[in-house]
Length: 376
Image (cartoon, rainbow, N blue to C red; front, side, top):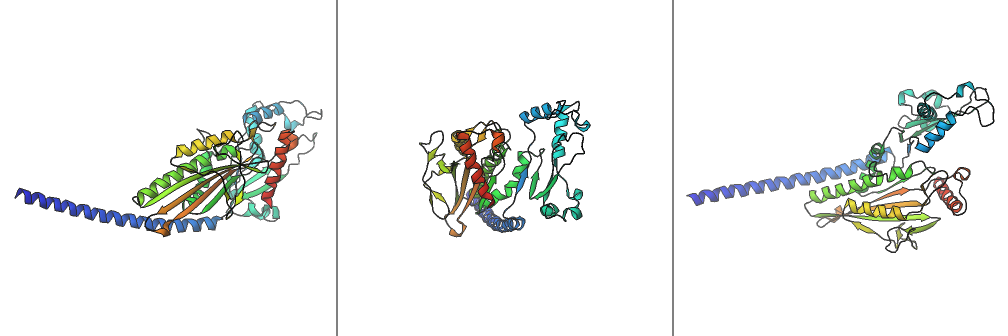
């Protein structure tokens, strides 16, 4: 009687486990179907909000700029030798004046603050009038006009997102995260930072250990998605993450991951295949730390020099590419490859301010020429 009772309990437990496994498989299947629906809806949202979008970020003053502002604020007279106008008398607190100066030059109006009727009369304010855009208003800095009334020009622009000096790296990532999700879903995505030298492009893209930029945050999301996908499909789906790092320096391409790469990287011969560069090193990464190590190595090999405008000026364009490849052992329709390009462009320069000469001058000419091609 005892043996038959145990056998009956064992059968009951086996039946329970079978029912549990059946329910689990059903829920996983439903989850995967819902994920496919999410992918479709997410792609539609991206298309509706614009496949091409422009974000702008205004960084806070750095220490050297604060010192310069403090010096200018305490000058007793103008550069021409005439006494400063009454409106330019230095305030008691230079730090407050610096902050006030930046706020006067940059204004971030909300929807309720915009005068649409007046702005729409000028074709220059078309984007500013679009209520779906976030806006920025630029005002010409104060200039000593020898006692005359100040005439300060204003410009108004609308962008898909506007980040003011208070916004941090997490805020920028919040705006870029949906694009990284599109790469995970199998689409091709490109994000690049464009701006003048010393405007904070590399900080936004790479950051540091405390304030991580877009690249380390994107890599973290990619590996988290890899783990989640492989777990959801119980080993029937595998995900591989491959990394490429290229540098464009003086219109020549260098592979920063080549084993023989020196301080500048190994120069490679470019061939095109379906609009892709081939013959460069592609590293398959197994962890987030591995990608971080590859990125640090590339940063050490990247060409960086000091100018009057920037003590650590990137003299080349950095192209960071991640390929997110999903392969199914049972369903080939699930196979897909997403590509994420994150480009840290070299900053444009005004030669009279950067003081570039010799090699720096040659680099600046190539940088400005290549950046001007983006407008064509």
